[in-house]
Image (cartoon, rainbow over all chains, first blue to last red):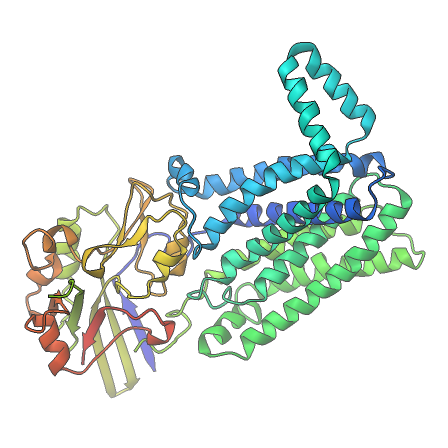
Length: 326
Length: 182
């Protein structure tokens, strides 16, 4: 028998850690979607640079800076001392995943804007240029200059988006995965898992648009593969936790019998991964599945995955896990 | 003489868990209501009637390999004089990564400032001529030992040389400089 009593009752720490809430989960989700769009559109640009893509696929990269800004807003709202946020950009600390994330975002914004401009149909680009020229000539000159540069360096823009997107997607998992004090998070699987989920939710987000038939079929097929990989990564992650030491076993229990079990298996594994996998498979076999249903489920599942991992990971620390204190 | 290396040891044989150290710390450091930089932990082990009770006064472990310092994105968490782990509130964004990184849950957010707070080993005292911490000064059973590990004549160096001791969560790999005397 061991009974532990502490006189401490600090908010956000006791009785269990609860420092990060929905804002962080929402940021990690939006960061993943953004990462997925950047990688997938970047790859499509590398594959095909002749502009032969549907109007919606050509325009949806503009979502990236918008969704990312929304995610950054959530992240900023989570800070307890918000007006010090500029401090992230006064120093680079290589041992801090959060510092890496802050600086990766600096690369993501211009890269995604360049990608969006590159894929925008010529007629729309010309209309934008003409409108800017009417009221601000220097702005129009800058746009033409930068637009020309982007067109000349199309492959570099595509590769930058693929690399920065993969970095961002991986980072969203590594932010949690590198925290050795939280056994549920402290797994190298979390980086690849969040990246795969980001690619999958990115593909699902793209499938919400009115794409060409060929584009939709290719994306849906890719999404099926990504969901299968995600399920495999979740299995490997849970096996790793359940077969570890007492701290990781206690962490595994949170999802395998503990307080987050029903939510995790129902919302993430069931509704968010298995159901859309079956829906996409049925659609491929010619069955009737309501349009965009699978995509909506993948997006909801991606948000649930991050939400549950963020909350469940705080449920077990070293001392709550019953690790011998000395 | 080499640079200072501050450490603390709590005698678990004599600590009675009176919480005077907690009150002294709150007063000395003007902590907000409901928050504490140190606390008392009681651990009962065994099977009735063969029970064993350990009482400890706990706080930040001022680890040599402090994960809170490593994860801080702005450099607000830093290693101060004598190896004391400190927080610079001017640089702190309140991102709480350091709180998540600490295996001892020794940090909290000060609701008045939105910045992270924790034990400082009373750096404002020990680096300015007062050799004792507030919790050490108040302890009625003289269970708290503090001083410079690099000074072989110091109280802390002597008790660690002569008494069996342990650190919390050694498997966390943080190399604490807060010890408990058996």
